Each structure stands twice: as C-alpha cells, then as structure tokens.
Length: 253
Length: 284
Image (cartoon, rainbow over all chains, first blue to last red; front, side, top):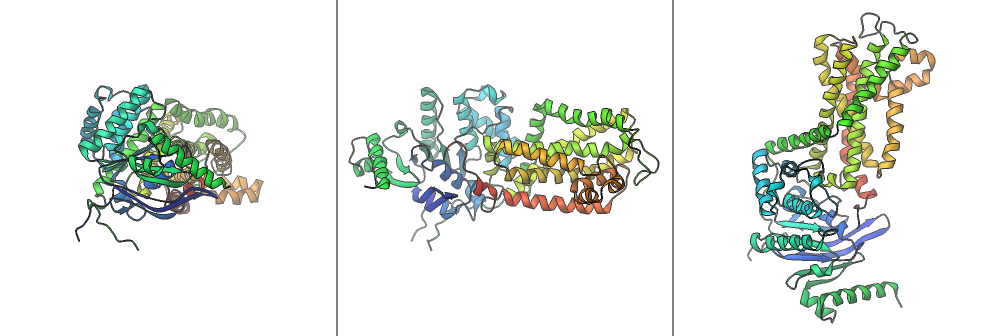
C-alpha cells in the first residue's frame, strides 16, 4: 500500500456544546488538498465554532480534527503551523502599521526580523499593497484590511487557509477581488482553502461544498452532486430545499 | 481506532531561537502599543504623583513613621509611601494589560496570539513578560521625578530594585491575566478592578506600616499580612535600600508561580474558562 497524502483537513465526528446548547453535532467531512472548499451555512449554523476548533482556540470535545494528518489536540504545534486563518472579526492592530502587524505575526511563528520583513514585503506585493506598508492599519479601507489579513495568514506559508466569512461587510468589488485572489492561491500555489460563507453567490461550480445547518452537515460534495441530491437546478435552490427540509424534520409533523 | 495517515510534512518542535524571536515580537508589540497610548503613560504617572505630592504632603504631620527596617533613620512620610506607589504603578499596569487582553479577546487580537503554533504557555508567559517590561520605564520615570522631590534612595538601590520590580511586575501581571480569563465581559472586568485594585492597595503596607495597622485592628493586620501586595511592596522597599526581605521574596515568588500556572491553565483550551464560558464572538 502506498502512503497517501492525508486530507488537508479531516473533521471526524466532531460535536461541541456551549453549556446545553449544541453548536456542532457529529460533523464529519474532509478537504482534499489543493481544493477550494466552501462551508455554506446561515448565521448560527456553527461555522465559527468549527473554525475555533480547527485553530484550537477551543479544545475538541468529541471527535477528531486533523490537519494534514496532525491531530489538532495532540500535535497542535504541527497542525497550527500548517494553518493560516482569517477570522470573521478584524484582528489587526489598528494603531500599528501594516508591516508591523505582519512582522508581529511572523515573530509569533518564530520567523526572525529580516526574514519576516522580506516575506511581509513579498506578500504585500502580491496583494498590491506595497505602497501602504508603512501606513497605520486604521487608515486602510475594509477591503484593504481584509487583504492584509489574508496576506498575514499566508506569511508562514501554510498549506491550509481557513477563512471565516471573509467578505462580510465589503463592497462588491472588494468581495470579488478577494474571492478571485484566494481562488488563485489554490490554482497557482496548491493551497487548500476552507471558505465559510452564507453568501451562496460565492460558490463556483468547481467547488467542494459542505452545507452546515443547525450544527449538522446536511450535504457534502461537488456542486452538481448537491444539486442532484436536492433535485434542484441551481445551488441556491438546493441550499434552500436542504435547509428547509432539515427545519421541517426538526419541527416534526 | 482509525488508521493513522502519513503526516506531511514532518516538521516538529521549535528551535530555542524561535522562542526568543516570539518573545521579542510580543514584547516589541506591547512596547509599540504602549508608545501609542501616551495618555496611558501620563495617567500611570499622574496617579502616584498625586498621592505623593498631595496626599503624602498633607498627611506628613498626621502619620509619623518610626524607625523600621529597612530605614535607619526617621523618614518622611513621602519616603515611606514611595515603594507603595511604585507598586501602584505596576498594579495598574498589570490590570491594564489584562484589560487589554479582555479587549483583545473580544476584539480578536488575542486570537492572533493564541493560534500561533508556539506552545500556549510560552505565549502567555511572553505576554506577561511584555506587560512587566512596559511597567519598568513607568516606575523609573516616577522615581526620577521623586528624586527631584528629594525622595532619594542609595544610588545602588535603584539598580538593586530592578529584580524586585521584575518579580513584582510578573506577579501582578499574572494576577491580572488570571482575572481576565475569568471575566467574560469588559464591564465585569472594570468592576473587578475596583474590587481588586483598591482593596489590595489599601489593605497593605503601602500607605502605613503594619505595626500601626495592628494597633488599630488586629484583624486588618492579618489581612494585610496575607495580602501578596504587602509583600511585593516590602520586597521593593527593602531592595531600594539594597536589602533583601526573604519572607516577602518567598511570598512574591510563590504567588507569581501560582498565578502564572493558574492563568496558563485558565487559557488552556481544554481545561480553561475560555472553553466553558465563551462562544466565539460575532456569530457562531
């Protein structure tokens, strides 16, 4: 038997509770390396909880999460160094400059000053923000801040990039730019991406889609497979049917 | 049991130099943040100076201080309360760093720190060192101003007090961090500051010698004796006069270790309050 490359992320039977409220219920799916996976779900579906578990902000209560085979609980350092994360909330230091924010992140990954600075300049060039390197983050637009956050998440060269609703609150152009940039990372650099969103128009036909609703996975597969399963002509209808069906099942007859 | 898949790529652990880089990065950021918050620096200085210039001057006649170690002569009341005020700076600084941690946690900056692959105990310890480090220039600036107010310790004392300040700064920072982990909301924490800072400061040897407290109320005396802040004040007071108060050193050292372990456990994802109390901010 040959040694297979493990999935970029393997979520196995993960459940999570906040007190009595169940945020995730037996969630299982995996992400193939170098693919763009969309975690589709409405607000409150459990997306952010899943992100907090993948990034080990919270410990996994039940089940396992592995990043390229490294268990987030037992081998968290190995797992975390392979993950780049963009949280839903802004997490940049507004009073520091763009480059200071990036070199701080580099230091948190044990990357020294000069290498950190070189990498920061490199990623800034890629997101076309080199000219803003020394500006305070406070003076950037929402879209620019998001691009800096993505650049920061890529600074330590992770193989899995997880983004939690990264386009929320941005205008149409910034949204499209960011989406296109992250898609390019998958194609050109082979980065694996988990992109959480509630915006169905961000899903493209080639994506791997995971539908999360009320703490459970309703469907997982290619866009065509999900449409087929829901007997729908387009992904939006499929999503509505799946979630409404689940709601009806919960409410009961 | 599920079959283990090959891990890829195989990179484990961090080099000592990477730990140093991480520590330097965290201290550097804390320093930058401090420089950007000039009002915080001014407030940190004005507070003890008000005590020194107004309170102490007013009470000089009322509160006589007899000769007690480490002093070898009668000292002015201003001289007596100076170590307490140095610690007041560190107490506020420790609480302020923690307040920024609560703020960070709610605003998300703390997440950036906690998702670093470097072990979490090291990240939190670095954060403590960083908070302590920014308290030092504040204390020394205060001492410099006090010097011109003719509150002058032996020159060597200014050097000898440094290790004491490092230890006391770590203790107060660790206490603040422990509190920040228990407090979910900013408002709660602001309240907790009043319940911690003022009782700690007043029920200590910062403003009056303990023998005087004992005369007034034996119960309060025992409370003051049990207060780690008292021992931090005494440690610094003795160090400023190039002496070591061994009991205080033991208490402050012990409390620092205790609070640090407590804070690290509290921020541990599997054990801590973080997992039990918090839901991720801004949606689930």
